[in-house]
Amino acid sequence: MADGRTGVAYIRVSKVGGRGDDLISPEVQRHTIDMLAEREGIRIVAEIQDIDKSGRYFAKRRVKEVIQGVKEGRWSYVILWKWSRWGRNLKESQIHLAAVEEVGGIVRAATEDVDPKTTIGRFTRDQLLSIAQLQSDMISDSWKEAQDKRRRDGLPTDGKPRWGYVYEGKRYRVDESLRETLKAAYEAYVSGASLRGMALEWNAAGLRTTTGILWNGGRLGHMLDTGFAAGWIRERSDTAAAGKYKIADFDVWRRGAHEAIISLELFERYRERRAAQARMAPRSRTASHALSGLMFCGYPDCGSAMVSSTSGRRRVLNWTCNRAAVSKAHEPNNVSDLRAMGFILGWVERHVQRGESVTEEARRLEAGRQATNDVEALDADISRLMRKRARLADSWTDELIDREDYVRQRAEIADALAAAEAGKRLAEKRVAASGITYVRQFGDLLDEWDRFTPHDKREALAAVFKRVVVHPGPFGPDKLELVPLWQADRERWCAVVVD
Image 1 (cartoon, one colour):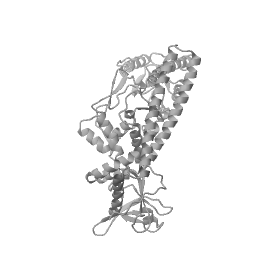
Image 2: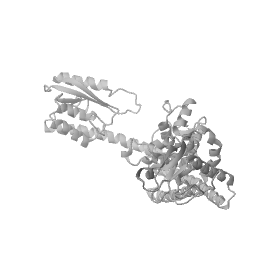
Image 3: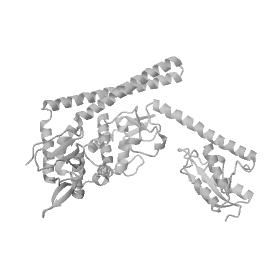
Image 4: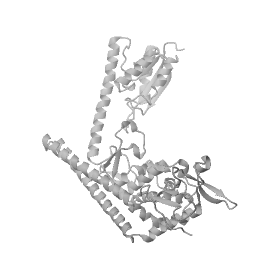
């Protein structure tokens, strides 16, 4: 049990953003706390620190430990440097002060000491906490204004380094020594390469992250996910999503003022494959076989994933419906890996040879090219309108136009932006539907096939095919259905059996 004159020193230091001073360092706070404790005859028995923690929130701080210590009788007093160290959110600060007092504790501030047992003391304390919140709100308002200015200028809301770019003169310019490396990373990924494999290659080449550490698959994926190389700047509209870094967590994408290294089309292909990988079972992401995670049963009302198995003395690899094998839901359905691979590679080879010689294929590819051109044109329109909006805002700020003209022009720009963005979304869907980007990969896939590992082969096939459906019955022209990523599920692509 505490003797009634024991206390804990609570110290909090916010993130100072490189301020470089020690005005509120832990040492300064502790020195002032010790002076009050000595003057009042309070013995400090513990110190609890919250370093780099905001005063606006209590969730991730150690205040609960402070309260628990009072409850368990380890100390009776909680001593702070100033009331702002307790919190910069009046409501939350009062709630947690009440929690301390409910278990018999007393909170005091060394440089702003008041008697919380009196009405005037509590009033003064609350006023000091209100001032702490006011200071925080004013800083927040200034930061928001600075962020809005950076948005108008087509910049990220922070000045952090972006891989592949150099930040100078308040602008990001492409680092020419890394341009091709970054572009090749996106192209390799959509062609089936793994992030882990690319990270190992980058490390071997001496490439490091913006913080100077080694790459791994996760770090490389997070960097590519930003879309900065495609000209995007991403944000979250939901502050609750802070700390989450999946592509889906970012719902605000705006065009930046920096030069794009890759096309929007390539980035969309990258996003599609990232989404497909996220839906895939972890075990399927590192494949033991080229067709792992791609084979599905075509029995009516089944659609289950097929699993690999071996048979005979030669351990022949087969694919069989797991549901049929386990629950006997239908007759066995299987196909040998050798026949399936021959079928698939034959299909790919024929598409390489066909190229655009078939009228329907030519029309489809031409439609894709036109849609791609539309996307680029609309993207240029969007960038132009955003620059126009920024200039309008500057004109209003500088009092060069009156409010009526500002409101009218802003509404006109907003309407034009909405129309351009809607048109671009439709054009992007037309690009995806055409399959133009996938056809380019067929030749590369065949050229590199013999050098691929099983995992690389699966990655390359997954960049072209959504799945391979194995239908019931003996092997023949209709046994396998290849579903490319750009086709609807119901559409069937069958090829002649390869002997």
